[in-house]
Image (tube, rainbow, N blue to C red):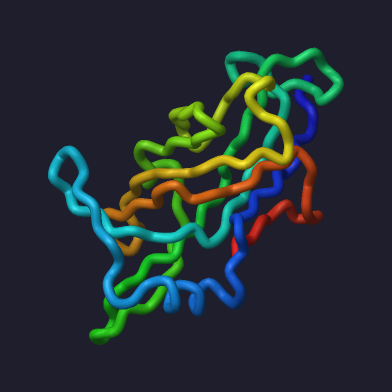
Amino acid sequence: MASEATPSTVNESPPIDGSTQNSLKRASIGRPETKVRADGTICKMAMIDKVLATTVPCDKGGETLPKDADFTHYKTTFSRLVVAEMRNIEREYVPCQASLSAQLVRELVVQVGAEVRDVSGLVLVVEKELLSFPQAVSLSFDYTSPQGGEWYVEGHPLVLSDKPESASGCCTLQ
């Protein structure tokens, strides 16, 4: 029988003062950086704005287990990813938010120390020995924006925790 999932704390390190919009205006002068994927597609750089994730004990196959069970792995599910994209609106680059679903995200990888793990369907399953909470990780992925265009996030630092930070479990990155 599966236990209730515990929302995981996800934070950016270090926090940036001010709202995401002001942070993006300071961090990006003009157009966003770009990269070319192996298939020749040009992608623009975005920044993570918000993440909602849950981390629960599981077996090797990702089946959720009760917290008091003898488990071998942790499963982290990224249930909400919100990014900020610098878009050219009336000749000025301004930040625009976009919520991403699993269908829009490609090549999501999480780096835990020296280990790089592919994430399938926004679900990461790793051996419990690999995580020591709070755990610093790095998140990278390509995606198709619901507002149009190809974008990417590269090496974004996060901290995962197995303890809920708030009753809602929503974790805002500043």
